[in-house]
Length: 535
Image (cartoon, rainbow, N blue to C red; front, top):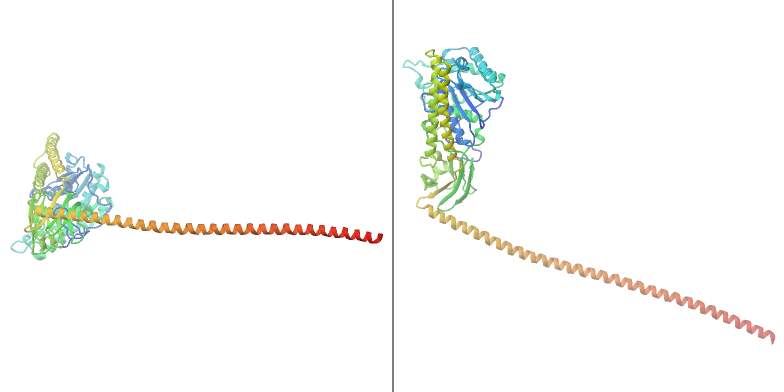
């Protein structure tokens, strides 16, 4: 059994059955904090033949998967009841008051008695109307199809080959109308019949005596668990509320619905700390029966620990807190070990106490419902005061039990468990010493890597500083060269200007000198001419 990310497992022994459900509008949602969920049904909901019905199994699941929520699961099932019987006592029975969600599963007794589809559907519509009058919205009401009549099981035939019970066709006729009617009424609908029939057919291929019922009508303990599962699956239970651990050979530890920390894997084994998000469910009659029933079908169940990469023929000891849970081969650990099935699980004692309190709740509710059987059978009648007294007695006992359950749930929630897997011949102390040495080596390697990184960074910084200094020197030399060139250019320009100025001055002097000389010559000539004339 290979379990990877995304593999669907339902918490604590919930079957991952082959299920085909039809889409329904409005969407089926989870029960929320503060909800009072009333389960309206017949003997399949009432259940006086087993320790729990699917109602209390749902309650157990919610206590485990959502310990922070306070949801009251109120069992309103009554042996022998039909929809019309519910309508007859609806206003008399105070248990119907105050519910905020309703789950209805009726129709088996109608089918046994041959009541027409029209009458059955009409009564169901009236029941939906009454619930809505009391404040429930369409999304608050979930109608379940009637469950399977397992008329083909080997135990349903007498010595002459005749079926004792055979009303499956009538249930199918109801279902043909019920889903579309539920859509018209604006309520949720869930087909639990089809997946139950498919699984039954699969089981009976191996053994015609296999059945999810005790007597072709009433689901067995395993069948009741499947009914609870179908509701949870429709609510989206596969999206969370799992507590599964996967320890791959080379990757980091993985956990679904919980948290794995301080994981170490070495030569002598492995150890880690695990905080599950869900609580343990006790191993009860229905779980044991369910396991036996589905053995070999390929269906998956449980809180699975899977460890890869261990030699298949070597034995390993699994410990949780101070409890030794058992010895398993590497092959068994690779296939997956169901932690919740192990008797030494640290939460088993509290889980069994929780299951006992839940069974007591079921018994108290079943005892209160019996008075309505007497009313339906017209064997007794009760005054309003007598009904209220019986109801108050049940509610007082039920609330006390729920408070005890809440206290236990809080005690179980949020615990972190140290876990180890030891190869045969090694002790937890040796594994811990190995883990410490590995941790020290890891830290030393990290410190060495840090020092080397610092040295490399220092060297790189020095090199960078040298490069930057050389670049600065080159820039400075270039700047000095440019400045020198500019100075030379300025000096050359100055000299040229001076030379031009001197040349101009000389020219001017020459001009003046020439002018003066010219004047002198002119004067001299004039003087000579005058003298010449006089002589």
